[in-house]
Length: 227
Length: 227
DNA sequence: TAGATTGTTAATCGATTAACAATC
DNA sequence: TAGATTGTTAATCGATTAACAATC
Image (cartoon, rainbow over all chains, first blue to last red; front, side, top):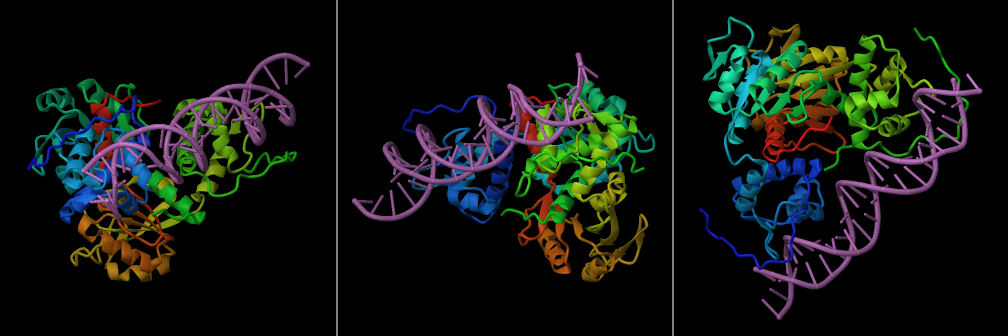
């Protein structure tokens, strides 16, 4: 599997200092998806031009983005798909398992629990929480439903670092605070409110209404999609 | 309601030409949410400094973003919340109703159907589609479930311009194509694959695995959230 | 009026692209 | 070797911030 380990003649090289721009990191996820696709189709190498074209980026941008994290390419050849894939997974932190806590077992919670994409990416919902006493103690999709008050216990038990909020807007801030005090480090928020957490806690949110609103703007203004 | 109509002494003013940067438009949605919040709390005016602070932007950025679309502020006063709110709604196109088609009635589809945020924003799912014959003809949350083959008919009937894809990855491209040929102009895609549509069709997608992946990167790299 | 705050221009900063020597 | 393609530097482009006259 490991195969071709290579030695680099050391060019005078210094990795850029400081945190990488957010835009670079979000493109990394797209590179990863495209590499998965290429690998499934048995393509062994890919050039920055090709990879860029597939995603609507310039070749220079692809090379620059990757160069942010190291030298992964082979002049004259391109990038080896398997190898680059593994490198990006390592960079993103998804080369290891991420146990996840899910709070809220309404339709959205159930949908997230059944979401196929997670397993592939090594995110695993290992504990579900809901305030509804009738749900507590049951098993859903192979995962036990707990009382939210047991968050701290289960976070410790399973080494959970990420949490997903899938409760109504009214309770989102509450849940966020419980997550923080339970020791969770990153929160993905699906409720339609902004939540406030200490700056050391990372936060991402998906607001369905905002997504649609952006679309409606594009439609009324006749904007065209790139690609 | 209309209240204070004002006359502008015309400064030499020209609205910036060309489409506004995507980043500006996405901040517009955030301004809108914050204005809703301020209005609920009976605040009548807000300064660019205050609005920016609440969202983690500079005062200059707020003014510049808004100036992209017109002169909405009052020197010495700030912005009138109600008025600015109405203006941004108009700009975003959400001052009118947007009938929406939802394809896919699994857990995610059901969750989207029950999503409260939509109504508030004047997005209304007026027709649901699912390939499962057992679901066709039923009513869910007050909306009839149709055969996907009836998309063109219902799109015309209800003047639907936006569609939401909530089907498994395998069928997403198929559904996208059906939507396009039915005349839908904007697609919000929740499936974990990139879909390909003609450039005149606007597209946005929400990929849960990517969101979590971005979080895991931030966690392993000790990045901090702004705000 | 004095104080506050806008809209806008100029200055700064950061991100993308072009170009090319180094390399396979 | 000749052709392809990288990593990196310099040039360009665009977005953010600072500053301030105009205005209420």
